[in-house]
Length: 601
Image (cartoon, rainbow, N blue to C red; front, side, top):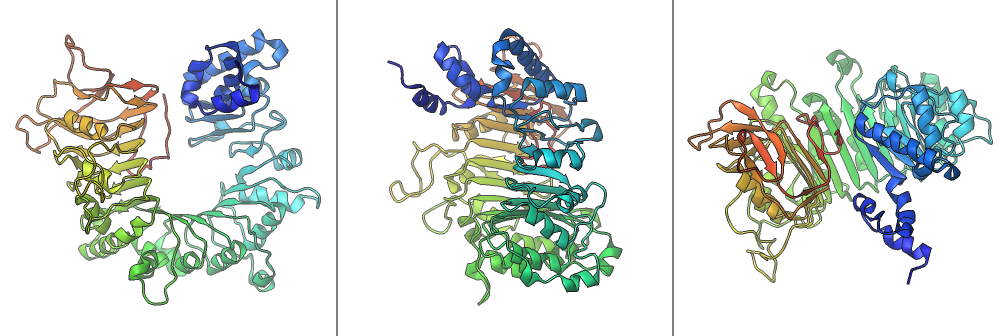
């Protein structure tokens, strides 16, 4: 007995997309139900994959002309994960013709002028205007203003659009706006307010500043009354790429966005002369005054130490982040997600007092009590005295060393690639019983050799439940050293403790081997890896079993167990298990974050 089509589609919609294509051949009905799900979102990672996709579209359209564009009619979203896919305008036009129902087409990689293309009127249902559009605003604004939900364009272009729009023409559906400055353009508060009037339901906005001019003149500053500004209650997320702003901007945002929940701040460095002439206003009063703030992301990878201290007033920020230690009367926060990234630039030129001052303040910023209330944490650690790091290294118990039950995403990077601070893998997992994603950079990883057990509990005591299995799904190890003579045994034990890992990335790690002629085998036959990324890992020959690293040898990835009659077994990294997608050419820089690059294979 067949279920009604509506129920059948509902049931089959729960099949993971990676498995849906396997069920296409069950029967004709399942094929009809699942085909739209398989092609709804298309992710392309290489030029070869794009060529195969285009060939499929062409053959499908030719085989079933009565269906219009064949399977292409099911495609609603196309994402290019590499900038190697470059489409001439005639190729883009062909893609538009074969996929008439696309709503979103964008790149997840840095682009050049050679990627630009014209979108109007190719995709009539387009709801996202990407940054690589070449259409003039006089063309795309009248044609798409009533259907766009996301826009990425430069500040000057958006300002011209809003100035020229007639009263009955506005972006009534736009919820996300990304304003980028491609040519050192200036955006002012009056211009920003004009944009808001044209986008009444805006929820998320990102602004890239190249200049910090809040008003074009002192006269306009005096004429602009903050009390007359209508709030934008739908805006929940604000992202700003700044070099230090005037205080007027912070006051404007605090008044304009009363329901703000997410602030993402990316800070740029400024020349010393500019800092002395135009000192930036501290940003902490704006953060403290945001009453509904749940997510705070701070990226200072390109900012000098002294400017960071001036902008964030470390003592006040620490008191705000840690309300239990806060000064009397200090505001309390509701954060569930926190990001704190900062690179020690020109480390060798710093004097000892400067480094000690900054690392000392940073090591006290993220405390154990703060992490207990967080669901996601991304941070750079500067010193082995870091409070959270030292807690993570200790075995959890029912007394002092508590776990972090809410934490589902953890991304830790140590500021020095020569870090010999040892993290015991089982301790990390037992401290984070709800963790789904873990990224570790520049750590030395070891195992305590004890049998695996879950976190301590009242039922099983401090030793935990040996039958418990960790829910970790995604593991990324970058620049790590494995503190064992037999790294394969260590890695096998690590993954055995997390049997649900399906996304594994191993980049720029160092494996010490007594015999580099013997393959390193990660034996996980029961794992299913939906995505496996291995790149730039090295073997170090340690015949004595000590820590004296010698000449590195680049590891070669082999899927499956090593062959017994393999004559060339040297420097091989073998991984067993069911593997859906493999990639070996990822580039993972030292401070590149987990989600900032995708598959390229």
